[in-house]
Image (cartoon, rainbow, N blue to C red; front, top):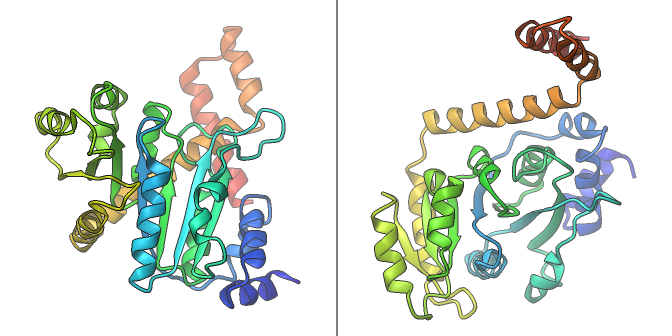
Length: 293
């Protein structure tokens, strides 16, 4: 099938066609796909937090909650890239086994492929595609491995930071800068000892809503859905513009890192034949010329 036929098939509920289109937008044919899509909006909810906090379990529980409300849900899980194949490593389809066979749920692993932040460079295009295919909610799970995770805030509204009781998660999240971009903070596994103390500790660090959750049993999921929807209703044009600005700058950084002239400019600066300010200006000017041609 050509791209137009793939889009029609994906809108008709074909997960194979949707998967093929996502593969295309991750590669050099991205623009071919995007130019055939009508503008569409979807709710994008981002999840980040330390490894083992329960992000995937939370995403699965929210998927169930949204499906019960009659909404189509897409899950994008951004995974560390394999150094050999560039592929995604985590077993998202296993973790989302409860939704296998549900035509209203689409799950996709996206390899980060060396992009500086916690999101893959293809994620914005993937979000646009999935919205155009009729998905109402896109749940975006990031790798949760450090300060670069704050990039998730450029595409999601809201950004949900998931932590565990005790264990130093709150302290590590604060050090990593995650709490600075959190719109909602969730203490998962709240049936464990120390959950109430963790909530009290967090209230001294953040000014955003803090919720308790037991994602494995569904306890607190409805409250989380309500908090997400309340935050989305309060979204503004100014906040959307700020997110778009961050997204553009992040992707531009990735393009500059891969620019053909970067190595030669770096060697000139290292040898003392050039200074980094002039080299940076030439790199940006060269990228601008390339984009116009």
